[in-house]
Length: 119
Image: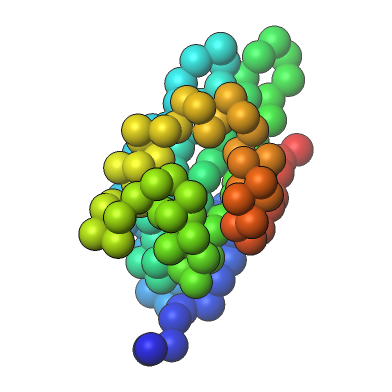
């Protein structure tokens, strides 16, 4: 397997630096009740799930990254076949996954992830 570009949190990515992963595709998993959750596929094969909570005066953003090596486990846990697009599976099951809590769901399925939140 070829070497992959270095990793960084989505908020740290500089699109002008071609050594950093580039976003290839973005989909909406859930929108409602002041919560917006998107998933993205990066050029290094990572999948990120990014949420923004906009209720009341408080704003909260979070980022979960499933690294390339664990994407097949994510796909299996979404009942996908090898040829299925993982972002399409996340669209199909987005609401149930979000309502379960993305971190809880990933942990329940043994899928490793990196987490970052703001503020």
